[in-house]
Length: 215
Image (cartoon, rainbow, N blue to C red; front, side):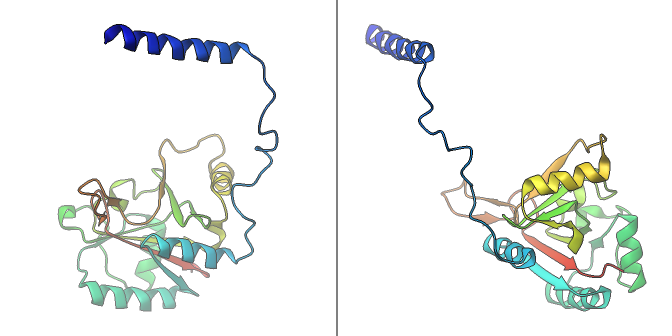
């Protein structure tokens, strides 16, 4: 039995060596020229909303801060939020302007219900949110609380991943953040009996606010 296995292995290796030695024409000469995705004809806001919703995320478009504040009050009332955390100075200033209550330190963080963060980009093609470790929110605030709220500007909405990396390059130059991650919907797993479970390794709810006038 062992000899048969060895013979089969040797035969496979011979075929591989032969294939490497033989020069063949590329059977798919136009593959690199073909487009992976169909040409997008939708507005980026619409495409992002469709893709995010398809992966169980929540998209809210706001014209200005007042619109955002009204939506946040509705969500806070619906989910009975009390422990809301925000660590980024720009966001803290924005929330304070509308007198929205939040924790600006990590006191009692183990009881956190909501983490509010900024992002680097929104990728419309697959409904993803690009984040890095460069902001004051770090990594904890987007992972530990059961609910993650992302606040983005319309200027951060791009079509593809390559466009998001271009935003990073424009913003940071050669000092690219050491941690870059894409959040695609709420945390999920189907490892146990192939049953989809949300919130297994992070937030079970993701809300993305796209604000037209971030003032």
